[in-house]
Length: 336
Length: 290
Image (tube, rainbow over all chains, first blue to last red; front, side):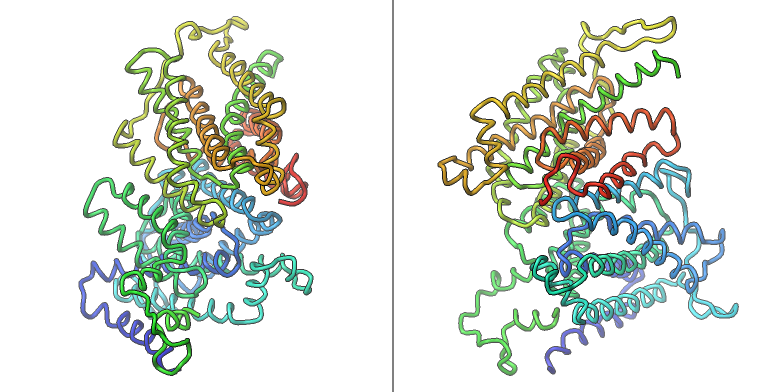
């Protein structure tokens, strides 16, 4: 049990220490990566744990960003305690409407239907005049946390912003871990592994999946809210399906069966994009080839790289034998 | 709306639906036989349009662009199947989605390297460039009529091949029961390769025929991909007849939506899709279980 908590504690300590040892640029970069991590973990609740490949999560992400943009009062900061719940609610309602229709279908239909409805949301903001149409609109001031007119936290400071995002990330990890390990999560996984059997055991599959979809959409909304606040700008591309697919890549890189794996995937992919952008103008070509490589060679994500680089530990003892557990088993337990 | 205007809009709707059918039938064939969902389908449509622009620019012949574009797309389909798509058989949908997403990134970037990212227009072949005078101030381009006729011929060919030939019999049997067909000695590795190439060629053909009446631009594949998905969801996946029904429905909804409800026209097809999902979740001509 001691080791199970060791790695997350060290990682959390490093995350807390980060703003004190690096420059503002890296703090903002880390905030962006953590925001994408929240989005990827939210998506994995339905993709990895629910077995439902959704291609419309960018729509929930972008919708929450638009809610912040529309609720921001001119050049004054928006109250976070009011606008964040409204943004989450908007994403949840959109997820409820899309999920109720899309979950009537299975497998490849579900992918196509979620993609189509996601694009419908894109066109809703692109073609109509809402918030600047295809040009998008600015979020002029970052939100603040204030009670009774007294400002507690001003997210305009990159360090404060980073810690608020980190807190949301921790809350997301806790919530998803709790859900996945609760009877609800078991039922969701059962429906993924064998829908017919789960149904005949009496689980209300449609309702369970819809609840997971709505929670996932609401958390995606949290990510979108902070993304809009950080960039200070929202545009229809935020809702586009290329973002949904990119987040799916993060989920695949991090591993489908874990809670925090997609977070790792998000960090890896964002760092990779940063490196590729610096190296070549045609970074998307390289990214595409890397995505193809990962799909073909690493179907369980980058953790497969570990034995490839360091060799299979043939003498590795069976899992759960004291402190000499294999790295893979430790990772398994950590991601649980 | 008088009768002539209505007729013109109806022709537009049919012409739009026919092009949609070309592209969507390729998508539905590939899924029906290979069991692979190909998000890069729209990218090949875009590539077809750019090939049409490129070949007409250098040769001046649209007919050559058509033949050359389809041939290049077909060859590309054979190559891509043998390198990438082949490894997706039996993999889950997530792997298929992400691999084809990777292909989109690669194709988009290769297109940018080869053709740039400018918007282009392609001239219609001169003998089809005129228009027919309907009334004093209303005319209809001959090229649009030619698209209708051409797509009808292609559609008829597809149906003839599928329903009347040995190849079509293999394709239908494969869609029905893959294992059983394999046991009967059909080489599916070969069938898959050619079906994929035909699917890609159909997508490119759609892009080629649309090029003279639309502009050729980098994002055109995305829009077409979504539309083809809606067509396939409406009609029922794997069913070519379903694709025809779905494509015509979308063509009519979109064209007349723009006439009667211009402010919400881009949303209407999704409303239609939602309605069909409530009524028949597996598509109008789909089988009950997928």
